[in-house]
Length: 53
Image 1 (cartoon, helix red, strand yellow):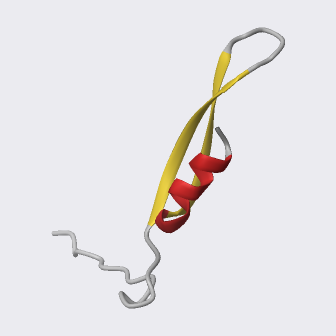
Image 2: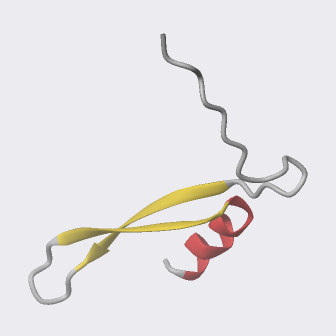
């Protein structure tokens, strides 16, 4: 029977919640869209999306 392994990486008080942001970026030459993925803290998501419109 397998044992359950519990790993604690950070203390809950200091943990940072992160979000994966996926943006569609249009290529100016071909007009095709590609996707860019970024991982960042949740607090920065709204500001990041506003500055890159």
